[in-house]
Image 1 (cartoon, rainbow, N blue to C red):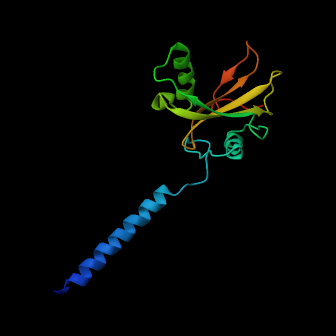
Image 2: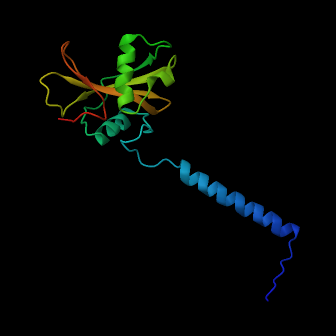
Image 3: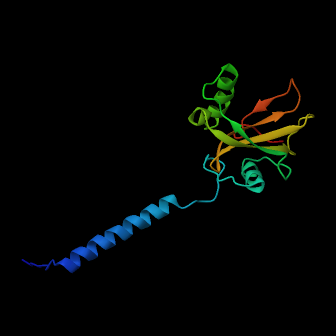
Length: 155
């Protein structure tokens, strides 16, 4: 039989604790490092017109730069029927504006250049703290269309 004894002193205990903390820190860093923006997530970081256009491009939409408009809008605290229907569109693509009820968000509006409609087509991105929280593609005519950013086919 082989027996090995290990003398466990204060230095070794501190070393083990420090190593465990470094390993834990490394794991946390790997999990939280911003990966390249992907269309299938709603975690895209949007802080400029160009980043919004890049996000839309990752979804297949081509837009003109600069954005036509960037404004601050208020998501209502209580939703009426129209906003409930709009949020249903958002839910279908993985967003939920009810999480942001009562908050001010940025709204970017772009002109879409690769849609086959005869109308002018716009893309809108709702952004809160540089995170895309919703959006749509819609035409300019009163009898036009509106669809989600993710679940529509460009051009």
